[in-house]
Length: 225
Image (cartoon, rainbow, N blue to C red; front, top):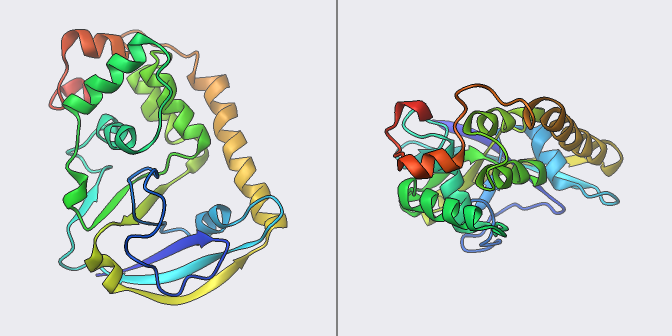
């Protein structure tokens, strides 16, 4: 199966290089792409600099692809991967205990896969995850928050095999005057919905990280599905 992918960047990248990039990204070292050219354009611009949506095709047959949005996983598996790679602020004892609990019970052996599909923790979405481990929002609210602003998901190339298979097919220019504004609007929309709808909308029966830790809930608990 051929998959069309797009990578937002300030430069044209005809040949992605294995082993390059930032190791503190959501899923560690890798080449971060999206199925959406529009999303790539938003990721490729800065306030005063235009960018590019680099276009690729990837032959996926035979690749081991980890889909963190698959039925066998829950949002805490995604969060465990994030906790391994991103720097979270854990100012309280609860946040530190929550981090240790999630890493102990929901860790995923993601490094063995050729590629990963999962949410992208932009600034707003990273703060939602932070609120959850601080006990501010419930498990249900975290799940809902990840869909605010329609962020979508990213496709990350991890193995040498995937880098050998990806082929550059061209690029689309992303003008900063248009796409930076769209990027900021999406982020503001997610934050506005979060603060007005999700953050304070507690429901009876909501699960918070404190209860999960106290009950030693595991990944097979039906309440997490």
